[in-house]
Length: 292
Image (cartoon, rainbow, N blue to C red):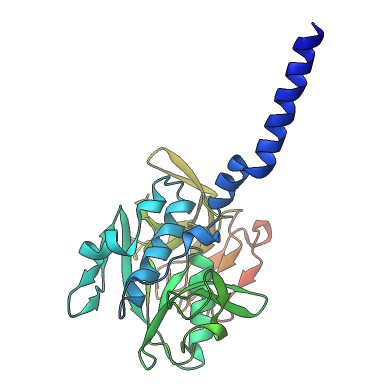
């Protein structure tokens, strides 16, 4: 019995030492973070900065979606669908079920507000391209007044760094971005877009209505699509702009923000439950030229 106890103590000691030297489970869990160093990559060759940045963006998007094969997303594996030889990164394409779109930036100082909004809606980041550099990076987040990025250039240190430390990319000079287009669907005549972020995986925003002739609009607390329930938490910019026949509006209790021009140009609009809403952020011109 004494020998058995000694053996058990030795085995426990060995296991503890082994776990300290090789913390496998902790390391594996850390990789699941979208900001883990293993998520970021350097470009394979000169001129493929946007392709490499897109691979990193799709890796982060896949992690948010719980896609356990995110490591298979690389510059080499997305090249056939995302890259046009002689033309660079395609404007629009789909890889592993994720749809990537291209958008033109407003330019100059207006880029800041535009990109802050995009990063709020796209926590996986957006590919930012500065044609005058010329170079592209993955813009990852805006935190404490600073834009951060992952730069595929080999002369920049790996991982997340301030945009100011990137290889020649300037926010005001950037002209285009690529982003992952989030799911959209329509229920009961209202068009929704999934807000696919860490904190809002089960939330949607209203982006429009099908019947612009209706005089009443009820924005529900929740909506169900494909067997999944979503909270309705936002009304997007321009969602019901110039919906001139709309007179009665009821806003769901989970809606916290209304975007610019969402209900602009509506005369005689009556918000039936204004005091019962959770509205916190209403854009200055959300109800421009509307009589409420």
